[in-house]
Length: 86
Image (cartoon, rainbow, N blue to C red):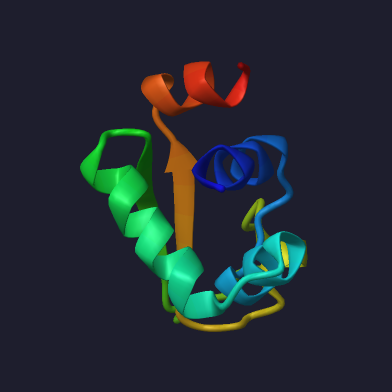
């Protein structure tokens, strides 16, 4: 299940925890726990926390975000990239 989550993050686009949970057919709470576990193991990192306080029209994630705030953006580390490719 952790590997499937890594692959979802790796293949993009940016998704909410709700979207990740739906794709994996699990609860949002479980996705959040898995993300914390992957972060503790060095596979993902919390890259940004957007509060959309300014005009986000120029943001590369604008289409994925839809101004849902706050937005947590998890990205793969090098270790996570390698594991997601397996």
